[in-house]
Length: 316
View 1 (cartoon, helix red, strand yellow):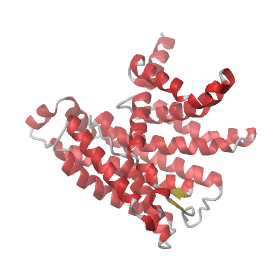
View 2 (view 1 turned 60 degrees about the vertical axis):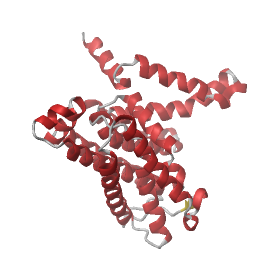
View 3 (view 1 turned 120 degrees about the vertical axis):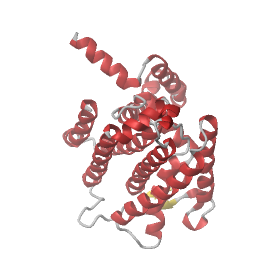
View 4 (view 1 turned 45 degrees about the horizontal axis):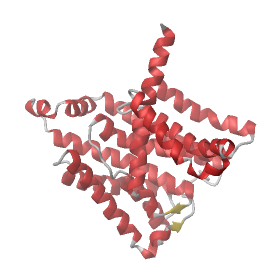
């Protein structure tokens, strides 16, 4: 947990650096990292700890985002109501999808979660009232005395949500529920033989992870001041999975570390390639892909695993 605490402390102190260096743009980059990191932490509960490969968690981010967009369309701008609606709808959808999909496993579970996500994606594309495929512009939510048009207030609201999610997941992972969830991942038949119902634990974890992704989507919409179905496309779910595997599967700090490295590579690689080979700067993904593959293949335990091994070697 020390790594997670250091990362959160780094985000808390980061605006001081951007203020002195006059680089306000990087606050926006940090907000995006925190929001994707939060969503990845939610998915990691079922993927890393529960062993459930869900390919549809971006749908819950989309539900959270549209909770803001549709509420704003009908004149509801209160951010607390947006968050409440998002958590409620994501919990209900997570329960329904979980009950229907968690009776299967492996490739069947992956395909069912992907199918539900794509159904929701095309459902929102067809809603012309709310912008359809083009999406809709919205105003930032109102949090009573918090003016989100003040950039640093929005930054620290997102950071506060990330800290709350981190503490919640910390308690969950170390609770009896978390121990049982890891045991189900390790040997579901043995847990069932002990008289426990693995399905109940998996559905509960699925609902919690859906709500966390919904919260990230709600804050994402307020930050961007724009909502579109793109946020729930299956490629976004793929991004979240890459971030988790990159950072460290089944660890608390891994998804956040993965989000930092993933988005910084996305930010700096095009510029670096532009310096080395200007004609190929638009093809930066050709370099990005092999870097990710190399880290996943040779960095056992992800970046967090590599980092911890280096620290142990330094201590010895």
